[in-house]
Length: 222
Image 1 (cartoon, helix red, strand yellow):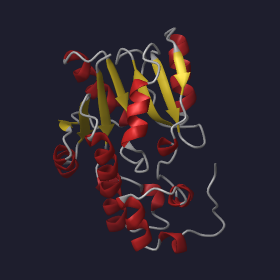
Image 2 (cartoon, helix red, strand yellow):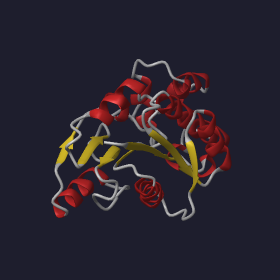
Image 3 (cartoon, one colour):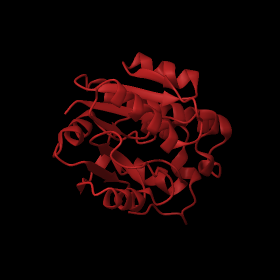
Image 4 (cartoon, one colour):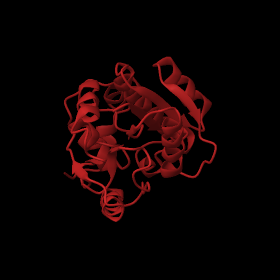
């Protein structure tokens, strides 16, 4: 199996709108960039694989390049599924017969976890790693890269499973601790901060005093 790893990253200036109750625009932009850098750092050591970042933001693409990822410009600007689809199609054209995508807002993931996910049961055509509520898809490996239609967004975990059934593809689910925590809502931030991993994102959240900003009435789920 020759694998490409793809990280789609929305422009930080448009990211994390649901964190507006606890973060101003400048801090949300800063957080989005720092989270992406943590993900790039985790991917940077996996030199046995193709490594790509796709975004419409030049600064994000340059950050990815610094960590050894090949930058791809998101020509469509139509969301995560379209961005990943562009990158997966390019990977297939380049000769990769498998592709793995993780989002740019899972800063707790480690290189070891990603290497394990990349190697896990190579015979499986659709491999899913869910978020902590098992609603979203925070890791998706396809063999081949066009094995199913991409359905990122609301309830993507069940939608990707439905697409696999529709296409008669073998499917497996793998829980990956660092991929359970994407930071979309205030309660997600609290859950991530309880994860005992040293990341640039965690240091920034402490610097911003986030724990004190999140209302006590919004406990983390999961």
